[in-house]
Length: 121
Image 1 (spheres, rainbow, N blue to C red):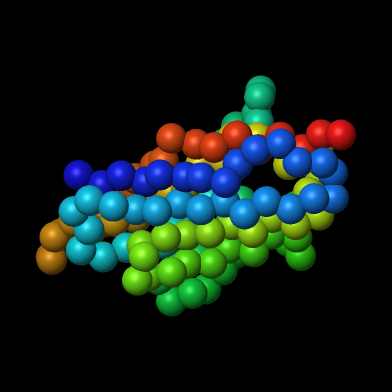
Image 2: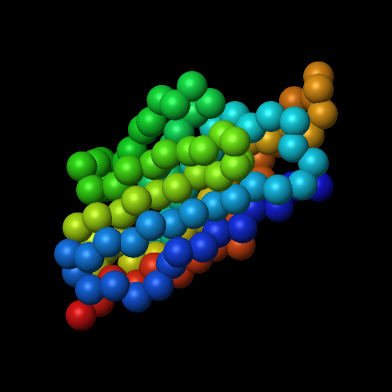
C-alpha cells in the first residue's frame, strides 16, 4: 500500500507565497511522474504541474512563471512553490504520483487527500 500525504496549505493574501509538500510512503519500488492537481468549487480537477522521473516539468499556462514544482527522490517527496498567488488560485490541491510497488510491475496512480489553499484579503 502507498500513502501520499500533503501539507502546507492555508490562507494567504493575494501576492503572497505558499509551499506545498507531498510525501509518499509505504511499499515503494519506484516513482514515475509526480503531479499537483487542483479543484475549485464547481470546477473540474485540473493538472497544475508535473515533474517526471527525469526532472522534466510542465505547467498549466495560468501558473507559468509563478509556480515551481520540484522533487526530492531520496525523500519520495514532491513540492509546489507558489508565488504571486491570486484569488483564482483558491482550490483544494491534490498530490498524485505513479508508483510501482514491486520490481517488474506496472505503476499505479495514487492520490493524496488534498490540502486547501485560500487566497483572499
